[in-house]
Length: 119
Image (cartoon, rainbow, N blue to C red):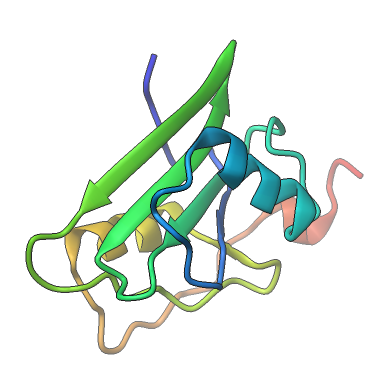
């Protein structure tokens, strides 16, 4: 099933990417430059130099899925990265939909990850 959601982890590749690259070349960037496993379940996001094209590489059960969008007008504006180099699901959706929030305040919420409950 083709699906991405808020439970996935999203990593944005910060360098412009050649959009002619497909599964093997993009997974090579993931392992060679990002030092991550392409089959680890994370979603890797690539933008071209003009930021008019976006590709997302994701490993699902049995193989890779490549999501690709080309804008006919406008550009993608990458969001501010989290401290661990990821972007949130909500920031990804806003970027893809072309919505740029000028000012936002994120209220503190309890997080298992931050409080090391299960470590």
